[in-house]
Image 1 (cartoon, rainbow, N blue to C red):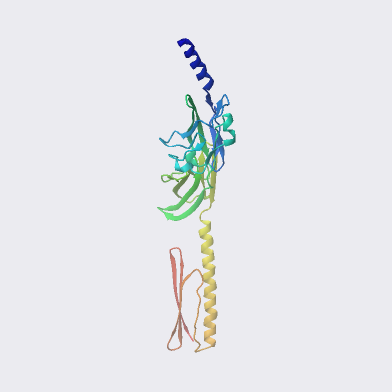
Image 2 (tube, rainbow, N blue to C red; image 1 turned 90 degrees about the horizontal axis):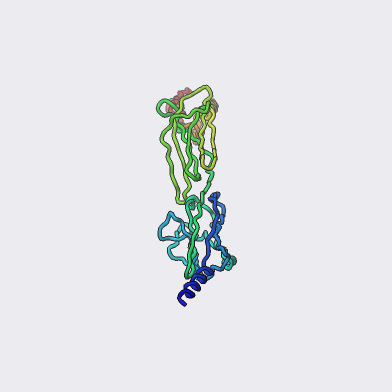
Length: 306
């Protein structure tokens, strides 16, 4: 009789046991997309009266998602997953416990465990998730003269995993640059930034390249002849200055023809720092013009006898 009871217990356990299965290969998710982490029972029995736990193994005593006896358990859930996880409730009766994760972010990367427990049995499976995010095209800015050269800075954001940033000359040779600055935001995405001081060359062609070898992604921006914007700005400023002087000459001519007239309003142009006209005794007009461009200042006084 004892032998028969043991055999019946063995048969009962065999009937109620199950195996939890999932994918054999890691899941690669693109940031911002929705993904499904497959998990199911074999045989395909109902889990509606069981406990289903989804865990991120980087967190202790907290859950990604928990289902127990027909209800979602909100306690001890990881805050970053709030509102982004769900099961397929219409599939629970046939053992499908796959997790849907929406709006994937960098912090979602890691190892997940699908743990299922009945009254007398449990099993689990571990799933690896990698997150891929291609960041913004590098933005290159000119900082001005630095230590006998020209200071440049490059920045790119929104990457995962953490990328590398390199500066290259026109021949593709890596330049000696300052230490890279890396920042990781609350969603797990990386921003990289690096300063460099370059010397003038025949081409003045420099490239900022951001690369992530794990996901085989490269993004780069070329800066061609960094002195061109400065030259263009100088030409514009010089042109405005010439126009201003011509305008003043016409004003003086008008004053000469209209002695005793009073100048009420003179509006300076954009690149002119100061513009002053003084009406002084004994019929003299003093015109004071100040031009400023970068570190160069032209201070001009004109005395005109009317």
